[in-house]
Image (cartoon, rainbow, N blue to C red; front, side, top):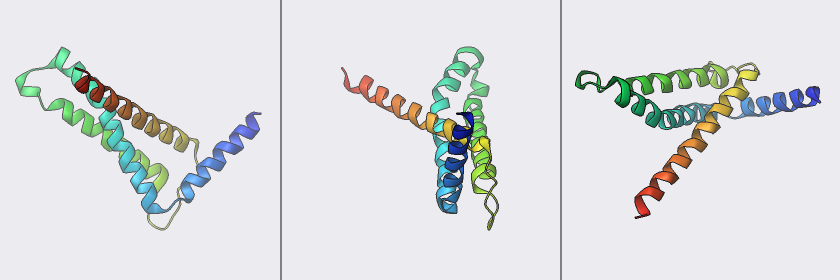
Length: 121
């Protein structure tokens, strides 16, 4: 059973890596944007609750930007690679896509919840 699940995961990794370079760049960019959107309320709440001062009000935006940049660079390393080459198939690609898809789902749920709050009264 483990062997067949490993084959299926490597098959999906190979499929993801067979997409065009432009599509893989879009995935990396979208995943980094959605990670930033998903983490924004959490980091903002923690910063406002425990660390806020007028001199440090820009720090949450810098933290979120740093995390999004790390996500983009990880995607570039894992799924985009250098021009003319295909990155090797690694298990980390599945984790990267899992985190990215989770961030998209979480962001969509937060947007729906926001609309619900706005238009429920």
